[in-house]
Image (cartoon, rainbow, N blue to C red; front, side):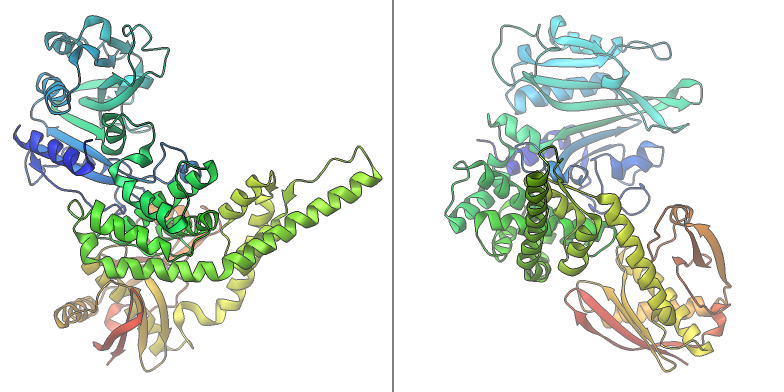
Length: 604
């Protein structure tokens, strides 16, 4: 059996032998430049360099990049879906092109992984009215000994890569590699059966997309992607992604603590897969260099949803939420200890955050499920009564919006969990009704909060200045520790400001001085604080951020801009110029709660 560590090592060493530099993996959490919450593909962090910027490490690059995709969360539980996975990649930035790449891919598949060249199938672009057939790649495949009958020309939807809706960006044909999962007479069933597995993909960026077609690029790029998790399953002759060494330890541990066999029952198998997958992804997101924490918005909400879904499925194994910590330790200490050493450094912090979220949710889960069962029983009693009166009565099979919102508001159930529980009972959920109830609740909350905007206990010139100082300070913190740094709480009086933010360590004296100097430098520059009214989606497009979240994309919001420093969505109020604030002095930095630090500061 080939292990995940061996496969990673083979990939990196092979491409280093071809003059590539291992650039390592970057953060899983999107930095705002790619327009997505998480990095969802190995090439995504390299997009600026594929678009023309020079990479500091040269023109031949390789790595193994972690990725997170959450669009299929509800599909996790079968044998193929994962929310975290790794892509093995290598790139040529205006260096080598098709001839070298086809030869190296074939060499890796045959000499490093032991594939039989006579069984390898390859697909190339068939061409259309705008771009010619990719005979060049097909020619190199033939020269390398790929059988003519194993080369297939397919249309744009299968063998072409481009950024949809853009003009002036690189694009081009791709060459995909396939191998049969089981023996067969020949490749005549390639297009009609699922006997073949896609092993990897070489994209040749040789064109520039124009409004009316494509032009040839002067500097052509290669972007290669091979899925480590998928390839690991195939190389080991498995039909279940949860039986590779990536998950074997976690599944074995779950079997041990639950006294249930993975293969003994479909319900148990699904629960173990979901728990293992979701805990793995949670470990990766909390332990990331731009690590996030569970919350009710954005990426933090996805993390909370994953953990709560894992906790929900612990009930099917009849074990306590502490089991999540055991699963997490296996991923940190035994599976990803070499590939992601930062996880070991942050182990205590990761486990503490998982434990906190587990306790928070488990406290309400049992009573929430009882409430859900009451809803279902009530509907079923009504159905039985109405059926006894009218044999043609159409039974209700829906949880109404108010019931779903009560489960959310009182018991902490995400709507997705209610939908999932309902589905198991053959019910649906009135999601529109839930959204209406949620909106009404938000309006009430906003009305109640008007008197305490921005953490101010009262609005005076001094408190307004302090509030503006929190904006500058947060900008400084984000500059120092990354854009995942967020406000977690704020309290302002006429005498001082108190500000809470997420951070995984106590700030050093040097870091505190750097932050204090940053704020005072902004104050000394006497920059105007400008208020702009923008639709919420436009504000986000322009780089604004904040704890406020609109009810719709086109809702108008206030954005306070300190040019070159900060751009926040906020209800205000603010000073008119940073020069009005005075001297900023940090008096204390301390822990507020796990993973959250607190700064107390004054203005003189």
